[in-house]
Image (cartoon, rainbow, N blue to C red):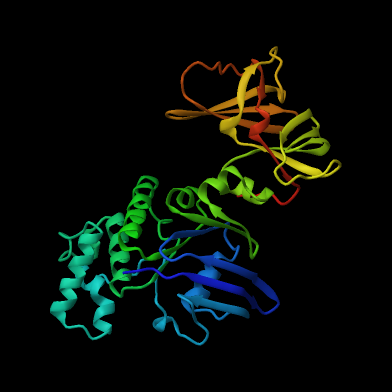
Length: 362
């Protein structure tokens, strides 16, 4: 198997007066694991359905491997699709489920069975082929669905939130297994999800989408460490948010006057003095200290609560009507007395200044 690239050239779609996807240019490289990440209703599944051929764009052109897909039906495209509901046939053994697409293509039974077990070996289910689907675990059924999709040798595998019905530990295990399958086959994976953990764990690159618009396309590290918009900053990972106005600039550094005083941060967009901005600080970049210590970017707060995550601990602090968080290694050395006065602070290089915009609400 070998993947093909996907190109969207000014692609948009309307349903009546509602624009589900605004004009979009996007290129997904052959053989990469690419995720579209965004909240429910943002248009990510609509893009997938246009690529698969089940929806027709209102404007623009979709190309797969350089070939225009205009007028090409779903079954004639070099794609395969996996939905959240796996739709395995309950009365067929596993191998026949995998080989179903080959039967539709006229393959002989012996050849179908041989190919099915080859694919089951690929997804580490080579000894499960003669079982019925209901005898498998949820994760095993998920891998059967992947094997079935790969049986028709697609260049592009389209996955629409396939792990959302699984429990947390199984989802985490399936992330690594899907990534491993993608690397072994070289097929282009286009993965649709609202789960940032899935996108960050598996993807080569991510598109962050909101309200029919792709706001950022970049590597996982860049999307997390250098978000392009306020929405991307708050949808991908947690962030502490300070609103204010830039009062001075010195190269890439700027001072932002907030209701908590002047805070110094990185200004990668080179926003101007007088601009209304957000300053974002990741919880893992927040430091907790005694209120009597004097530090740059220090804010006096009152401890509110402690949430334990095993090896990590999330501390929450209140200042006026705002709550800020710090994500720390659970080393057991932090006082968690709710009556204790504390201060939180951050290094200037850990504060990112971006234009004011919509924040994620989920």
